[in-house]
Structure formats: C-alpha cells, structure tokens
Length: 120
Image (cartoon, rainbow, N blue to C red):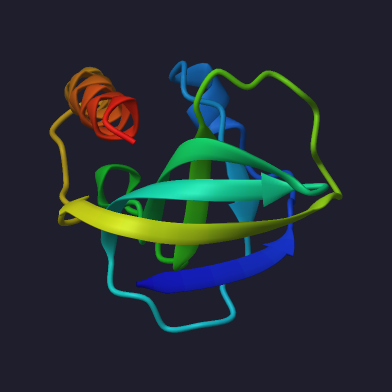
C-alpha cells in the first residue's frame, strides 16, 4: 500500500494526553488522509500499529501529519528513525465534536487493528 519513514519528533503531546501516545514524523510522500492499520519498524524490530495520516480536523490543525500509535509499546523513541508500512485503510479522516468522541472512535479503531493482527 504505502510506506514512509522519518525521525520521530516531539509534537504537542496531545496523543499521549488522550491515552494514545503517538510517534510523529514528517511525511515524505503524498498519502491519502485516513486511519490505517500499520506495522512500524524501530531498530530492526517490527511492531503492530495504527497510523493517522492527515490534518487533525477535530482540533482545527492545518498541518498534514503522520501520527503512529504503536500497540503495547511504551518506550521513548524521540529522535529515532522509524519506518511505517500502511497495510489497510480502516476509515477516512473525520472531525469529531469533542475530544471524548475522538477517544471513543480511537478505541474502536484500536480494537479493529487488534482483531486484524490476531488473524495473522
């Protein structure tokens, strides 16, 4: 599908505050906006993940982002290079009326990713 790589940069830490810490990298390719089931490689280890591509409409962000939530992962990877392989798009980018609505949908997205990876 799509693959991108980059150095993880510290952003506004909103994902962490919402309970979904993300690895943020600048995009090098034009990738359609949406939420993707993905795999993320860090220092030759591959992790299952969920990746958001696009502008964060809920918070009126103008910058086009790539934010990856690595499942069952809790390490500091700021400044490290990662590669992300997008496997399957599960939904389009959308604007939510509140952070709570966004969190609820993120939990649904996470569950879909976990089901997908449980069948591998």
